[in-house]
Length: 178
Image 1: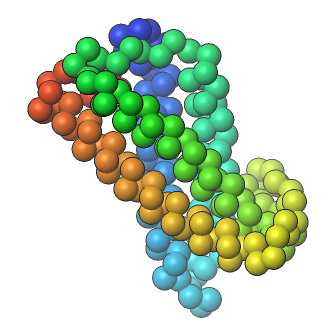
Image 2: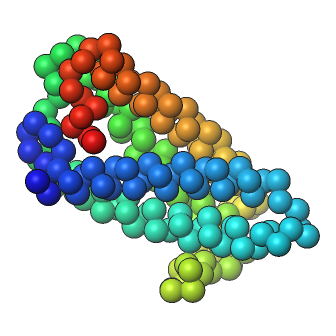
C-alpha cells in the first residue's frame, strides 16, 4: 500500500522516513569528519560541497515529507500508549521537524553569508541572500553544530523508544514503520 491508513504507514511515508534517517546520519558523520580537515587535505573543498548539496536535497525531501504528513491520513497511536507516551511522542516528532529545519536554515546561512551562492551538485545554483547579520557564518555554524548534536540525541531517544515498543511493550509500533 502506497498511502497511509489509520493502522499503518504506507510505502511512501516509510521510504521518506528511512531516506531522511540515512541522509541525516550520513550528513552528521560527514560534518564531523569535515571538522578535522585542514586546508591541505584533498577533501577540504569537495567534502563541504557534497555536505551542502546533500543538505539542500534533504531540504526538498523534508518539504515533501511535511506536505505528505499534512495531507495524508496519519495512523492512530497504538492502544498500548499511555497519555504521557502519546504526548511525548507528539513533542519528539514536532521537535524533530523544528531542529531539522533549523539545521537546514543555518546550513544555508553558513556559506551564503559572504554572498556566495550554493552550487548543488553542478545541477543548479541556489542564490545567496547575502549577510543578514554580523558574523553570520560563525554564528550559524555554531547553531548548526549544536542543533546537529541535539538531533543525534533525539534520534537515539527515538530509536530507544522504538526498541522499547518492540521488545518490552510488544505492541507492533516498530512494524508500522518497517
